[in-house]
Image (cartoon, rainbow, N blue to C red; front, side, top):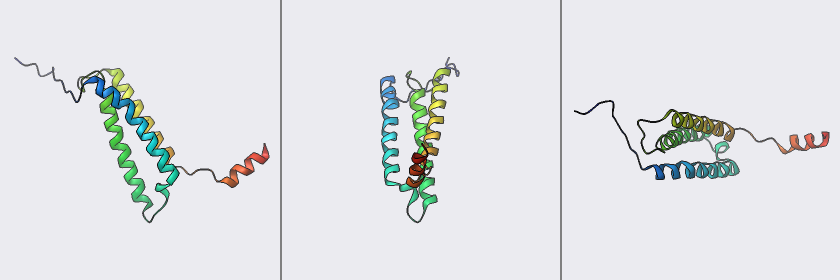
Length: 118
C-alpha cells in the first residue's frame, strides 16, 4: 500500500540545484548594477509600469531561487527546516535588494557639501 505521507517532489538533482542557487544571484546582481547604471526605473513615460515589472521580476526570481534552495538536498518536498529558513532569508534579501534598487542616489551637490564639512 502507498503511504500518502511519503510524497516526494523532485525538480532537479541536487548538484544542479546547488549550482543554480549560486549562479543566479550573481546574474541578478549584474542585472541590477546595469539597471542602476542605465536608470531604467526612472525614465520614460511609464515609471510606475517599469517599477511594477521590476517588482514582478523580483517576485518570480525570489520564488525560483527559493525553490532551488529547497531542492539542494535533492527533493523539493519534503524539505528540511534549515532549507526553509535559508530560502526565507534569501527571499528577504531579494526584497531589500529590490527596495535599494529603486532608491534615489544622493546628488553630487549634497555629497560635495558633505565633504566640505569634514
